[in-house]
Structure formats: structure tokens, C-alpha cells
Image (cartoon, rainbow over the protein chains, first blue to last red):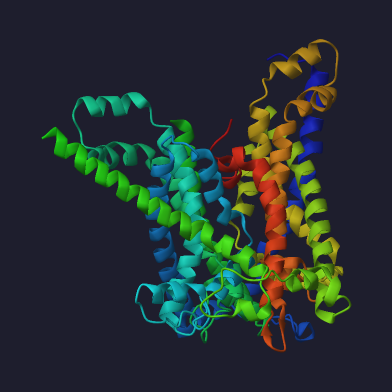
Length: 297
Length: 289
């Protein structure tokens, strides 16, 4: 480890030179905005009328938000959306991942093809599904009527719209869970399965008592990443429901955008953004701790 | 006894296969439906029951590219311009992000320095960050800096959203190159920089391509930032699609065709990165090779 002094200083130069562009960019694009956001959140301020200036509001913005029933509705809607999406995606994703860990003819091609939805733009996904779910001429209602079900007004009622949005998000992101699940299942040593077979364990028993627990660390990563992404979901709703009918499908992110860019209540929007950031950060912390524990093992 | 056991196992197996087929239809059906619909005329698009056999009609594509019957029509010109913007922003943004990510990833792979863990977490946080949260501030900042509704502004965004991903993935690829490569070069009197440029970089060529593939797809699809930071001149294709509602309601022929145009480059890059999906989609946390 005894390197000549000159070498060590070139190393230091290299660290500085290679890292500083990225650090500067991130300070400018992440740290500076977030610090400003926290600052704004304690002020009455509108980006529309910068001439009016800022006045100190203390915790006023937060107090207003946390007592506003409309904002609570956004949180409740986001919570429902997250719960439905993540549950459906985990169950479907684990199922698909389990089926695709097996080796069969055409498996690699099918696997790659099934990964496609998550690579698409949320705007394409939103409009495509809006087109397919149209109550009059959409193909989904046509297929449902084929098996004798009545027409569903997917996007003009609050509850069907929630489920429709969950179906779209699940369509896009089940492949992600399947991707991670397959990797986890394939990582389990064959000898463990052989031992279970010798013991005469049933396939279901092996799945629930061996496969799932052994892949839990990776599935946990998938779960947290999906919780984070669902919670901050914004693009999909813009293209898919536009927040409607009424404001029934507005997520917290959607509410931040609306408060900031339609009403220009910048202070209030900042406070809501700070709350959103805290929730996401909390989830991210859980993920980071989990990752470092996995690394130690 | 054992006969009935294999019997129920066979039933389970067929049920599983049936469920997998159903899932495949749910998964791939919509994409197929989009491609079919993009070739329909306006009348066929809304016919009930939906037509599977029809005369192909390219009016949607014509209005996306501003050619044929749709030449010089007001709606089409904007779409073509947004396509150019999307291509420019994604390619330049990807190149810069991959460059920065390669440099930062190399240093993180090879050196131990104070604050490295914090730096890596800081970089990872860009993956978690809700776009609207920083947008509240960007909206004002971009206006003040004259970046609002410009392609330069969007390139900055494209670099920003991808640099973290690029850093983490490239670190993974550099980790796969043995340290002896540089040690031998240095012993032989070459500089570290020379070893990096001439020896290590060529060894991670595939990794750089994969990283670029991911960055391209993500900036190509990016919507939240572009929709709020652009108004007319610098709209990208996804933003243009979402605002493509004419006097008669949403222009579905145009949207379906534009949707296919948006998907084609994704398909190409997706094929290139398919072996690295796990790594790319988990920020390089899983699936390192």
C-alpha cells in the first residue's frame, strides 16, 4: 500500500476531476432546489406575483395543508392506489417470475417480450389504455360484453377510475417485479430443492417455505421501489385520467403540480412537496439500510 | 396413489400455463392493439365491434411526419418539430450523462475517499426524487435563467435524471475489470489516466453501450419535467402527444401513430440492453456481472 507520493496526488486529482462535474450538477439540481423548497414552504409566496415578495408564514402552510380535507383526500387516494397497485403487482409478478424461472423452449424470448411494458412512456401507456377503456368503443368493454358483463364507465366514476389506473400501473410494472423475482428464484441453490424433494415436501410447501423466504431480501427491494414509485406517480394520471373525474384521481404529486402551476400558491405547494419528500425519503432510508445489511451478509 | 398425485400435478401445471397465457395477453395485447389501431382510418378506429380486418390507412403517420395528405397542416408540423426535439434532447442528454457517469463510476469503483458512501447515496437519491417536488423550484429557476421552453434546458434535465443511474451502472461494470490492469500499466511507467483511457475504457465498451441504452430510453420517455418546463417551442414528443387534442376532441389517429413512433426507438434500444435489464432497472444494485 506504500505508494509514492506523486502517484497518490495524481489519484487525488483524478478523484476531484472525475467527480466534480457530477457533484456540481447534483448540488445545483437537487440540493439547491430542495433547500429553496424548504425555505419557500415557510413563506407566503406566489411565483405568479414575485413583486409581492415573500412574507414569513411560519408553519402556516403546513397547518393549512394538514387541516385541509381536500389534501387529505389526495393522501387517501394515493394510499389506496399504492396499496392496490403494489399488492396486485407483487402477487402477479411473483407468479410470473416463478413460471419464467423454469427453462422451456422460447423462454428467453417470452421473458424479454414480457418486459416491454415497463420500458414504455407513461404517456403512451396512459393514452393507450384510455383508448382501450373507452366505455362506448373501447376494446376492453367489448371483450367484457363478450363474456356477458355489462358496460363499465371506467373513467367517469371515481371507483372504477381508481381500479382502471391500478390496472394500467400493474400492466406497466408487474414485469419489474417478475424481473427481480426470477433473478431471486434462480439464485437459490439447486441442492436445497433436492433436499426438499428427498424429504418428500409438496411443491406448494417448497414454494412457501423455501423459495419465498430465500428470495425475500430481493423481493423486499422490489416492494420498496414499487412503493416509492407508486406513491409519487404523476405522469400516468396526467395522460390517463387528467386527475378526474372531478379531482377524484389526483395523487399527492398531482396536487403539488396543480397547486404550484395552476393556482401558483408556491409556498403551499412547497410545503406539500416537502411532506411528499419526507415520505419518499423515509421509504428510501428503509431501502438503503436493507441494501447495506444485504451487502454485509 | 402415486397416479393420482401426478394427475393433480398435471392439472396444476396446466392451470399455471393457462394463467401465464392470460397474463401474456394482458401484457402484450395492448401493445399489439396500439400497432393495429395506428393503421386504422378514423372511422375504423371507432367502429363497434372493433375491426380486425381493415384497409390500412396511414393518415395518422402522415400527420406525425407532416407528409402526404397532412403536409402543411397546422397540427402535423408541431408534431414533427417535437420529434426532432425528442431526438436531440435524448441523444445529447444521454451522451453527456454517460460521460459524467463513466468518470464518476470509475472513481467510485477504484478509489476509497472520504464521503464516498454519502456521494453514492446522494447520487441514488435522484432515482427516488419525485419530479414535481423539484419542479416547483425548477419552474422559477428555468424562467430566471432563460432556460424555460428551450432544448438546452431539457438537455440539462436529461443529463440530471440519468447521471445517477449512469454512475451506479458504470461503477458496476468497472468493478468487473481487475485492478491489476492499472497496476501493471503503472508499473510499466504509464500514467493512471493513460491506463484508464487506453486499457480500462475499451474493456467496458459493452457496459457503456448498455448504460447509454438505458439513459436513452429514460430521457426519450421522460414526461413530467418536459411537460411543465416547456410550453410551445421545445415540446418533446410525449408532451406533444398529451396536448394533441384538436377541436373534435382527442386526435386518436395521430396519438396512436405517435405512440408507435415513440415505441420504435425504445424497442431497438431495449433489444440491445435486454441482458442488462436487472442491473439497469435496479440502479445497479442487483444483477452486477
